[in-house]
Length: 267
Image (cartoon, rainbow, N blue to C red; front, side, top):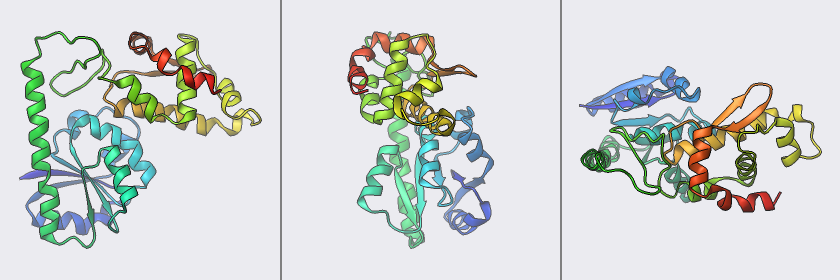
C-alpha cells in the first residue's frame, strides 16, 4: 500500500479527496499540524520521507505553497498539487520549477487519479538509484564543488554543483543586493536600517520590517531549494543579519563575491 501525506489547512475540506484515494488503496494521512511544522521551518525530514507521495491541498495559497516546497524538494518525495481547474502553461511551468511533479483537479476520474499518482513509481525508482550510487561512491572524497551527501541527501559541509550560479539566477534584484552586501560585509551584521536605506531610501524602517523578514526568509528558502541544508544566515536579535561563518567560507571558496559583484554595482 502506498503512503500518502495530504497537507491541508482544513481536513474536513479534503474529506472527499481522502476518501477517493482510500478507495484506490492509498493509505492517507491528512494533517494540518505537519503543515504548520513545515511553515515554522521545523526539521521533520525523517517524518516526510516516510511517505511516498505528498499532496498539497487547494486550501493552501500559492505563497504558502512556495514557502514549504524547498523542504519537500530536499526530502525527495513525489509532490502533487491540488487545484480546482487544470492549470495553464504559466502555472504549470512555475510548479515544475518549484519541484511539483503532478497535479490533481476536481474533474479527474478515479482512473485518471490513479494514473497520475502511479507516476510516482518512476520518480521513486530514480531517487533510489541515485541514493544507491551515492552509497556505493561514499568512500570517494568529493572533488571541487561536487556535493557531499549522506544516505538521505543532506548537504551541510559542501555546496551543491553550480550552487552559486544557480542562486544568482534565482534571486530577485532585492534578494541579490542583500546577499551580495552580506558577502561583502563578511562577519559584520547588516542592520535592518541599512537594508531599508538600500532598498527603500525614502521609507521608514518600521514600515518595512515585515518585507525585510520575507526577503531574508526567501534567501534561506532558495538556498534550501537548491540542495544546501546547512545554516545560511544568522539573525542577531536587535542587530541584524550575517552569513554563518561556515557558509561564508564555502561561498568564498566558490567565488561567490565575483558572481554577485554585479548586484553591488547596480545598487
